[in-house]
Figure (tube, helix red, strand yellow):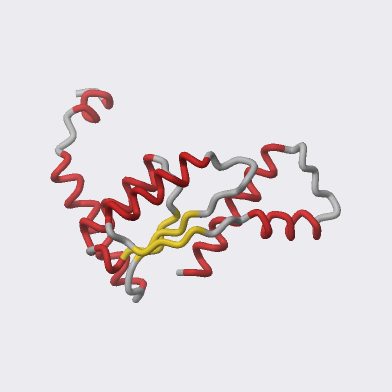
Amino acid sequence: MNRIEEMINIDYDQAREIIGKFLREKLEESGAQGYVIGLSGGVDSSTTATLAVKTLGRGRVVGLIMPESTSTPPSDVKDAVWLANTLGIKYYELTIDKVISAFASTLPFYDPSDKVALGNLKARTRMIILYYYA
């Protein structure tokens, strides 16, 4: 069986069990009470949040929605809010524009035309916020 055939023949119940066990073990190892998940409205964060809720329960999962006005489509925020409400989890919506501006104002070499660097700055800002909240 090749790799593609293996992916097609996934036992999804078994995969969910394995992932759930991993989530429970890592949470126990960390000593934390639950998970903080950045909700973007996309497939990855939606899947992660859903698996965490199914494994731990809605009371142990918090979502952070962190849009940025120039690059986050309103539909993504709407999707993230819908998911949080559907899963029944607490969530916060925090616009990161001011944080990005603060970073930009302190960097003498800041170049707003460098889309890759700006994208990395936005992603790292979101991670800082997630770590801080967690």
